[in-house]
Image 1 (cartoon, rainbow, N blue to C red):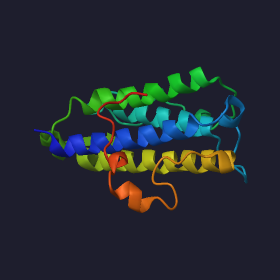
Image 2: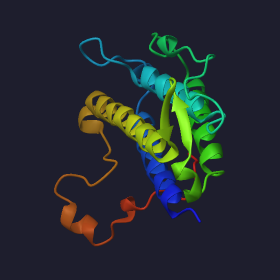
Image 3: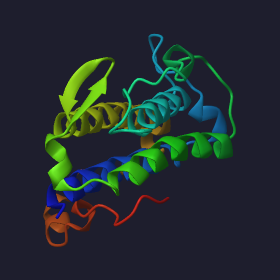
Length: 180
């Protein structure tokens, strides 16, 4: 049985879809446009989320979540990339996460994993990772909305449409799989 793990998977899928909905509204040059005040670009945030997910969820139950091959600092370097490169990088982390989550059951939630040498229950590690991913996806959405301005297409309930939305809250249901 895996109702808890499945609910966590659903939330990850929801945030993955939000991130994609945001950066798919941007042009290639806009993907690398940094936020004001030395903020990160969408590309930087994608590199960081992907690096984090790939590191945390490779050999999740067997090895420390901070892998020696991960170069976290380089994730924050400025880079020019094509949309295809951005999508490939994004998918690496999410696919690693998806592959690992599919192997977990609710019985695994009490097991212990380590991140940077610190022991955590699988449940704690999943919630910590979900919070981290949602935090950065929120940054992607905010940045994309700021860049798009009046051209922004809402990813949730548009202003003034709550009553209509509540008649059929389809956006509350996450996609059934990890896919674009």
